[in-house]
Image (tube, rainbow, N blue to C red; front, side, top):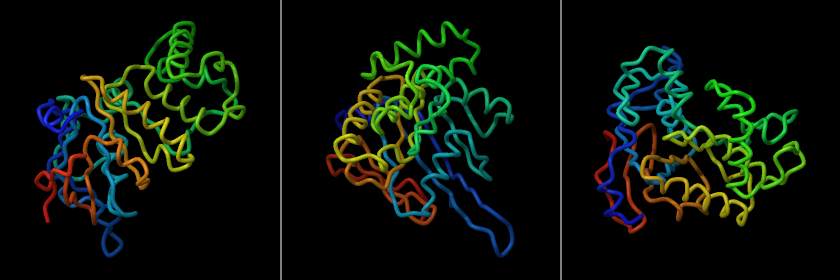
Length: 247
């Protein structure tokens, strides 16, 4: 996607002045210090920066898996800060897909059964869930592997199963935490090609937290964080946007 096309796209995520502190008193750690951040529909956005800068914390509050102390977060027009916890859980269940570095597949279940989990959680019948899971595995290049256990697959194939699980319920927001750091260069590249294709859907947004500078080229925009703040945002054309955080 070009910079101009990305700039004109509607917002998928808007974070305003969000703060998060872990602990109290002298042991308190301010993980987010008034963060402003946006992600757009139809883009793959990466959050980068040194360890401990707040990347994963920001990802977690956007995904609704971690409470934040202050500020506002809107995801596809829904205000997480105004929702009761049970409504945040329901929103996350229906609209957010998760892809993790360690895959988090259940080794005692087949690939189809692993991919079926989000559909079953959302009330689909087992037959319907497994039918859709099979179709999703076919779509990402794992035809005929659905009834194998994840332990019989390579790392790249396991990550594909994890991606299928994240996408099978057609979430609008896909959250990825270090999805390639456990993979070799070629396998990681194949995974990023797949995620970039996923992000091209005009009603979807993909956000990736990563330390892996091999994959920066796949991002439409990079958001750089340091010390709990967004320092700058730039697109792949080298164009800098105004910093999204307070200094």
